[in-house]
Image (tube, rainbow, N blue to C red; front, side):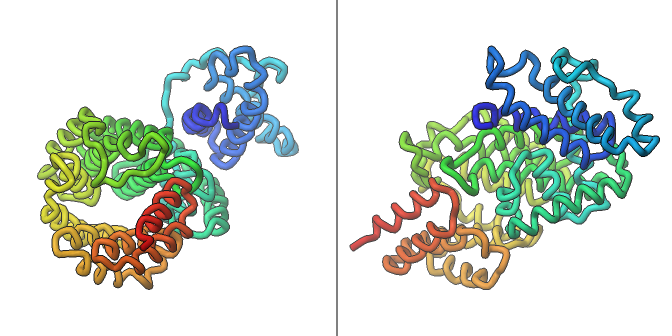
Amino acid sequence: MAPFEDLLRELAPPVLGTLVRRHGQFDACEDAVQEALLAAAEQWPQLPGGVPDNPRAWLLTVASRRLVDAWRSQSARRRREDTLASLERPPVSHVDTSPDADADVDDTLTLLFLCCHPALSVTSQLALTLRAVGGLQTAEIATALLVPEATLAQRISRAKQSIKRAGARFELPPPSERAERLRVVLHVLYLVFNEGYATSAGPTLQRTDLTGEAIRLGRLLHHLLPAEAEVAGLLALLLLTDARRAARTDADGLLIPLDEQDRTRWNAQQIRDGVTLLGRTLGSGPIGPYQLQAAIAAVHDEAPSATGTDWPQILALYELLERVSPGPVVTLNRAVALAMVHGPRAGLALLGTLDGDERLAHTHRLEAVRAHLLERAGDTLAAQAAYRRAARMTASLPEQRYLALRAARLDV
C-alpha cells in the first residue's frame, strides 16, 4: 500500500462518512471501506496512470459493493433484501468512477461527532475517532492513549458495537450534547496532530499527512463553530506548532531541538495566522487548555532567539494550565520551564513527583527530560544513563538516534 498510502489515508474518512450517511451501520461501513482500501492497494498499481481518474468515487463504489455482498450473505432476513433493492450497482467487472451527486460533500466532521457519541466512554470515543477519521493504526493509537495495544483493539471493537446498539444517527449533535462531544473531538484532533508531529514509531520523525489532516479538520471545525473559543485555540496551537516543522530536522534527518533550530526556517505566515486567531480568542470567554497551550507556543514562536525566550511567562502559563487541565504531560513540561527559570535542580525535583505515574510508563518522555536536566545540572554520568534509557523506550528511529547521540557526546 506504500505508493498510495497518503492518498488512501486522505480519502478513507470522507468515503466512510458518505457510506454511513447513506446506509447507517457504522461497523459494516468501516469494514467495507477497509476492504476497498486493500483492493485499491492491489489494483491501482495495474492501472495505466497508477490511480483511477476519480479515486474517491472508485473507493466509494467498491466499498458500496462490499456492503451489498455482506448483506446478500445475510439475505435470509427480509429487511436485508429490501435494502439491497436500492443498492444495486453495475457489474463488478466495471467500476464507475464518475462523481456522485454529493461527491463534493465532506462528511468528515459529521463522522467525527458520530465517533464521539455519548453512548461511548471518552476513551472509546478517542480510540474510534483516531481509527476511523485519523486513519491511525491500532499500535499508533495505543501509544497516543498510553494503553496496551490489545486493550485498544478490544476497545475499538466494543465501540463500534455500541454505536450500532445505540442506533446513532449520522447528523451533527443537538446543542445539549455538543459541548461534551466537542471536547472529545478537539482532543482527538490534538492527538492526531501530535502523532504526526512526533511520530511514535518508524523511520521518520513526522508525518505531514496527519498534521495536515488535523489542521484541515481544525479549520473546518472553526468554520462550523466560529464562536467556540477552544476550537480557535486548538487551531491556533496547531498552526503555531506546525510552523516550526521545517526546522526540526537537518539534511540527514537528525532531530534538532527547539533551542538549536534555525528560526528563519519557521513558517512566518502560520505564526501570524496562529497569533491572530489567539488574539481574537483570548478574553472572549472562559480560558481553556488549548488557548493556554497556544499562548505558550506563541511565546516560543515570537521570541527573537532561544536566549530571548520569556521563560517566566511560559512558566506562569504552565502553572495556569496545570490548574485548568492537570496531567502528567503538563507537569513534565512545567518541569522544563521551572528549570529554565529556577535552575535544573528545581526541574528535577518536580520530575521526581512523576516517577510512579503509570500514565508515563509507556513513553520515553520522562527519561528524556530527566536526561536533559541532568546534563544541564552537570551530572554527566546520570544524564548519559537517562539518555540511554530513553533511547531504549522509544520506537521512533529519529528519536533513538538523537538520544543515543546525546549520550555519546557525554562520553569522557
